[in-house]
Length: 258
Length: 305
Image (cartoon, rainbow over all chains, first blue to last red; front, side, top):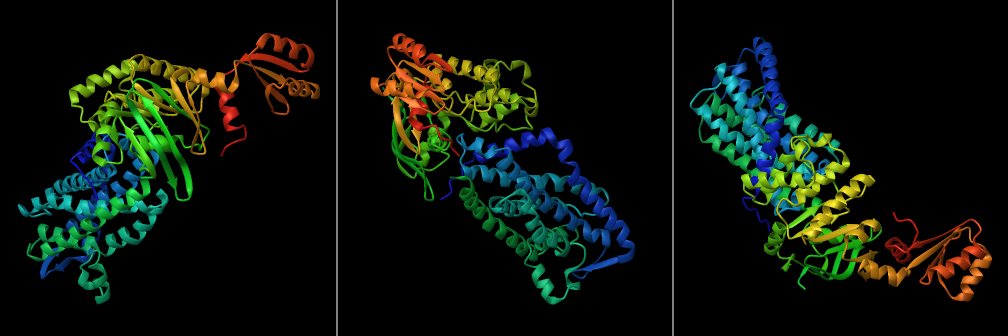
């Protein structure tokens, strides 16, 4: 049984207080990295690629990849927060130990960390959304939906990240989920080329990946058409939250409560 | 008198290893109660059950009158205790003041109160001029003082200290002791684990010595010394065979360590004159018995892991 009271907000507030101290450093990478990708692929590659056809619509390559890079940004910021960020707090700084000697219970701490991871996704993707909107790469008012979406996506990837934090034996082992899970999604999640260019079996595999669904919704919001299919994508993403959030709690309890 | 901690047949096992093997004790309100023992004796395991970090493997445990195995009651306990863990687990990105304020928020202390309390505590640990100092710039001793202040931010009824001065230099240690004596004067209940006997004698009203998860003795430091080590100790370096014979004939209590020999005695002057005059070859001192003598006598002198 998990008992989670609203006290998890304290953890969120703690992380936010730290973020406010370090924001000048911590907000640069999520801002600059996707912009670099956008410049390299969007400007460099688009002359080679030209127009891309997606769901019977034609879009310039930069318009095609901008929503995908936004999705990748959501994934990275939440996943890395609850992997490296949470692991450092848990193992090296013993922050969780200190918190456990207060009225907080472990479930509240982990929930706070995951919600914070989702928040990091919102912060990073909002900054990026603002910048790429200046280049007219997102249509509005639909584009505003990307903000709540970044939270839901962040929740899924933060939960997955927290699960790995609970089970890895040391911090170097995060390379494994990154190499086997995150990087393949980054490359094959419908990000840089339309999925229908892949052979059938590869397409089927790609549709198992949560990022593929996130890219699909983001693109539907940013370019259109936004239809019922996006709900299925959303449901698939929510499934990862529903699965990995309790799993992370169980594994964390097993790891820390002795 | 009301017990702040009441342990009955308390057990903690990790797989096949038994860390705490059915101990019972009771710490009273307003006293400083010590849990002493060598490394691995079960001190930290005991204390972690008391502040709700570890579930019990057996027995019962009441803290401030609440049963800690009930989650609802444990939450109440967690609001009313302050814990100083072994690690200096402060938030390194935050200043000293922010560390205290953030911790206060975990106890639902409203922000203005939190700041006022934090400033008071900074005065208490004599760091009021360094409130904005980043944590990584502090020495180990100063960090320890901040951890102590942080444990007091909720104005606890019971302060739990897990080896508060381990790894500190003598100056820092005395600084911490002075603060703790200040707290004792305010009759805050304190639970302390340590393996420094000087610390225990100075701070504890009563204590238990544990080893291999069991309680060896319980009592007031002075009583334990009198009972287990006598009043004085004569320490002889490189004792000769004739001294050993003399001690056996006189039926005196002593510990033979090979190159050193300790005689536990109550009639100090006469025996000391006799021993030092007749049997002292290399060095011979008469000193007051301490808690350390009791501790080593009861837990043995061999090295622990």
